[in-house]
Length: 444
Image (cartoon, rainbow, N blue to C red; front, side, top):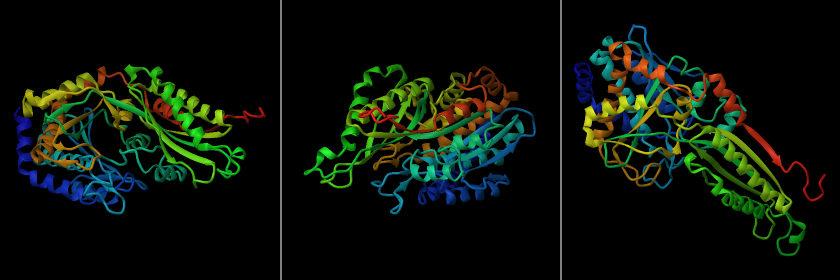
């Protein structure tokens, strides 16, 4: 298609620009809601293009909009600002442990490349609707003590970037979202089928200290209570529905204070993951019951704090068909594949609970995501194919009076009918309770 080729020719000519942006971000990785330098870079580049970049008063992230001047749907191209903590990676920040072993630097660079290509080729004159460019903070679910402090201060309401941006109305004029991710593999364009959602949990077992050798009978061992709780979770795993892809993976973050003291406080963290919001909630109830059982068995207490994490990513088949067509046009059918739903999670799932959204992987790395061996092994695919793919998606969706976009929007069945329903669901997931409610040894 001629209109695409005009934009693709620009992308070929700005490969060095895209790669240099990616490298600049890579050298200065920042954790979620702390991506100040990266956000300033994005603002700088959009301003050079003549686009106003709307930022927020108290968090990172922003949005630029290119209006075609013709009434039509709003298509958002999303990039993610934050890095991931992987202290073993050779390029991780020595103080914070953060590194872009997640490919988010490529996402931002390609997003900027899309904007530059559409503007310089002037193909927006042939499209209908608005093209939004959203730099989203805090996709990686980490550094939760910091984020919980932001919630307590009222700076944010939700712990992930896209959920917070939904709350702030950033997606109110967006009808479809497209983005890429990076992945290792044998194909250049890898179409996802969805991913799991998360409820995040912090658990604290509260026992009673005593000398572990001379007076263990006077103590209540919180570590034993935690061990029983974990074993109880393992004992109910066969009740987890396989079709819901349930995953529960607790870790002990504090196991005691001294070897000769009965542990009085032991802390755990875990996620409850699944591909269906109802099954996640049901499983979370079972997990809380199992954790409470450990406390009851030892005569201890357990404090369970739940936080909404991410919702399952729902991939619309009609939108994925557009993505497949664009991918085949770019790299050929042999280089395009569809993979099963991921057991991991992304906060794009929250967006997909309201509007059509897709994250297509670009096969350009070696090693694993979030791993010490992560490395970009195919720069042409990362910067040229990735940028062309996103550009092709925007053009296909908004060309011909945005016919494809309108068909996708009309046929989409969201999890929630509106964002108020989404907020009602998410807000119910915030909870902090101590179990059992009475002393099970005295029944008072």
